[in-house]
Image 1 (cartoon, rainbow, N blue to C red):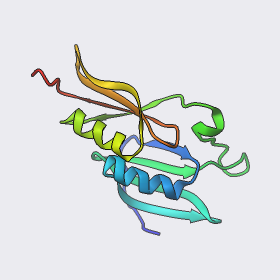
Image 2 (tube, rainbow, N blue to C red):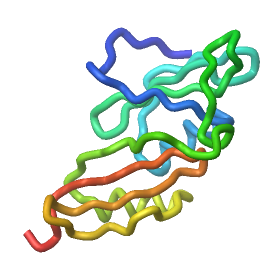
Image 3 (spheres, helix red, strand yellow):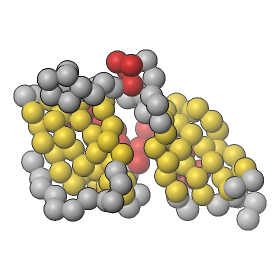
Length: 135
């Protein structure tokens, strides 16, 4: 267990199946740094990761007596995308794919810049936005 004293003003909180595996995956796919972990009865009760300068919190899904939160796999989908503003969309996108994410939307230049979207093995959608390659 590690301890943390401050958090980002707004943080995504993800519910996953197999939280300890998710931590290792996010370290590889998104260069996450583990800020704190709290195991609970052999499962992940809570973790805070630093990704791209912001906090992302996560835990295993628990029943109504604990948190009532369900993972995307338990729900059959997710209701949001975690968006990362990055300097090099292709670098982040390619690293995520190499780690095991699947493509939702290939990286492409749009009117607002470059954007790509992936789904991680735990069911969460991640979008990368940044400068267009054309300038």
